[in-house]
Length: 100
Image (cartoon, rainbow, N blue to C red; front, top):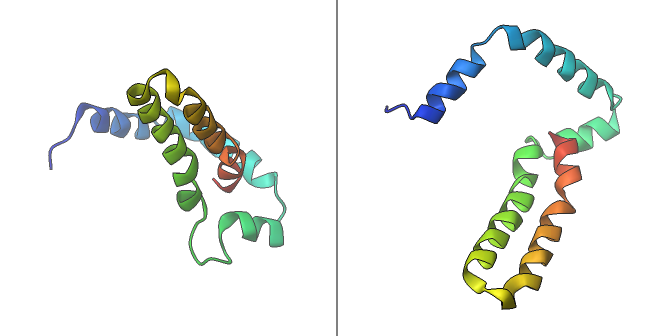
């Protein structure tokens, strides 16, 4: 398999052990924000049998990508549609971050 420069960069960053300590500390803090039980189960997707985060990321990413395409191809008449798509991505972004 061919390795692109971006993949090579990501692999080098993943192997930097100096980042592990701060990453573990941040992970502990974030995981401690929500207590065990129903809230954590809902946000993690336990009720679905699959992690919820990968599913809900499609909403903001799709809306923002659509906004980019509408902006770049629609001209001035598409400005309000693009703004609504950006809002459609921003609204669920908090929930998306909470599930991650």
